[in-house]
Length: 460
Ligand code: ARG
Image 1 (cartoon, rainbow, N blue to C red):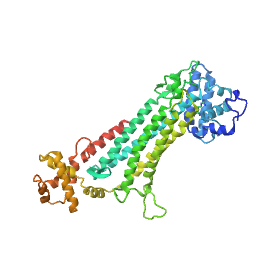
Image 2: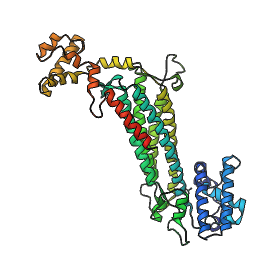
Image 3: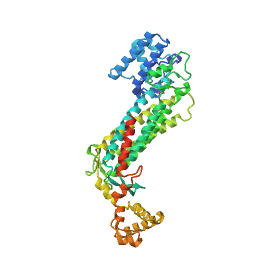
Image 4: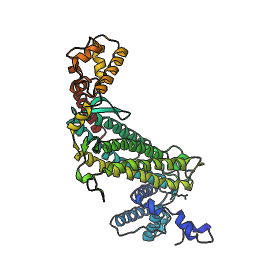
């Protein structure tokens, strides 16, 4: 097929170069956005008198038909076309003749692709935010149900202090809410229409940029034509926000993997969200979470691709930038896949409070509370800390726990100890006492759930 730019050339492009150059295999997914952008552009060209109104009308009608045909599977993308922009323009001209050749007046593929990508990612952002609403809502429900379920909290993966399962889950809700904030923020900066930047130096035609921007639902227009066609920070920013989101999901995944193991057994995944082994009949594997953990590397890789691709690029458009799409599409696809699979997996998982409780009863996670007991009786914290350390060593030596150590042993260490020590180190008391703002107590978790739900609904 003759190229659109064939006029300047005396030879057909080498076949390999043609394939190498082509982006239609991956930018075809932006056909809706490309057509939307072209419809707005044609309407503007007609309105400003740059082309005749009836030509604009013919273009718009032709584009609508093309859209309907692609949607219905009646029109296939031509792999020979260089990209989606050229494919649609060529198809339009094939259908409506000369009027089609006027569509590209006062436009370049450079501002066209910058527009299409913004429109596409704007829709993706919305879908991802909706999926995150779903995930945070499920986490809030589970946290509410387990607001008072005592479990050990960890530092260095060593049992540290008692918390509640609800509190643990809510920690992820707050991370995800910040991710959602970052995503919406990135959407705000993406909300400028680059159309009218043309190839790089805008145009001499009397275009109406505000009109196209408004038709396409943008809040404004880009202020500089060079920046309009050569900035891809909206892709980088989105990939960065998605990478951080994936890092959060990978941490949650890692914990779910641990919690499913026989060593912890804090939860059990529903059979529909776990997989077996081809050789070991006893196995039930948390593959979904392992894949989320693994795919996190992929999204971080996409971010690295984008940053590295943009580094040192002179203004304005360079073909390197065609590489932006596969990376940012992959990041968005991967996140959608991970969030939509994790949400029902968490919703259906069985929580095993008795096992959490049993783990919390071991490992001296109430040692800080024992020290605090002495502090409340007047001892300076450092002394109380040291003395409790000696008590723990004694328990280890006697193969017992603080709960089971006889009062005489406590009193031998320090006469401040009394019968009420057992109450002070009771796990439920330790947890319910941690009722400060942001603490793990049942009441605090319920307050967090309420606060988070308000935030989630605010964002809707
Ligand atoms: N397929 C190209 C891309 O994705 C469209 C812009 C091409 N512009 C150009 N001057 N070659 O970046």
